[in-house]
Length: 474
Image (cartoon, rainbow, N blue to C red; front, side, top):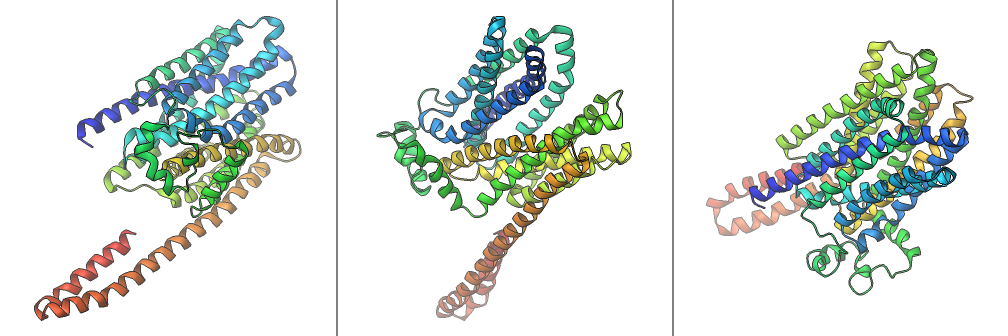
């Protein structure tokens, strides 16, 4: 790849991330505005819970269907129409008559949940194709940084936008952000229509065969006509063939359950701290969290640029332990200065886990990568959805510290198991490489001995150095 081509890829990816950050702002504004609007329309707190449940359930189903959708349509087309669908749903909500608003709200919830999940699965699985080899960590860091800043802006401005401009204005702003993101998708140098057909078959056929034929059966002569009941088992079998990947996805699901605990407990805890101004602690916490998230992305980008390496699977496990531990400390009643530091570390650890997890899954072959991200999205939605239900009930009985401690404690336990598995696997691989290197030395000495004594002294030294480099490099 020439430097000009790489620069063009990077520029277009930056434009896409800008559009994604803008749409993320609309998403987080949407979370607050729609929840308030549901309560205003229905006057029932239960409706708010059902609204969120519908959104998560739609995301759950979309995660299962993501691989099948991407087998039929190009990544560019899926990302474009996912944004257009969310914009259209919000426009429908604005135009809906009074008598149809409740039903429209739940339809919007389903569309936003499914489309948002499809967009994220497609974006994450397509990043290697957008930025090229060796740029995964940089690309993921840029994406996470944009989303983190958008989250703070969305949450911080939601109250002002709704209070001063009203719900209709908030929905129109949100709709506009999705349309902007759709326009940035159109700039990508990728095919728009149905894909994974003849054009891609030539370049991806061998890769698909190496991935146990999971996409081959959905090729030009039979895409999408396989029995849908076989897709999920096929994905699970394929993922099970990759060492610790199943445990990695499971840890991501438990991590999502932990995330539901601190998201639900923060308003309760902040009210206990200051009943007159409960929003202060929540706002400060998330702003500092986002700052830590953005800062760690800068560190990761520089680390990757300097060393040419990524934090990988081990970084995900260690980051999960650090993140869960800091979130538990956030509810421990520490002084303000200590809590701010904890929030900063929590954001940094959260950013580390996001980038390392995404980067590791992106090293998988293309068909398996799609299945991995789709299954991951399903597991994350399930973990967060179940967590919100369980945590909401537990907070009526137990303290926020105990609830968050149990949820994130479970993530720490599983993360310790995961880290042990990763380290054991690395140790076994290095031992195998060392044995292979030692077995290769006698053969090298025998060959060089036959060539004469003048070369035998230099040969083993060069061979030993080379073998040692291979072991350490592995």
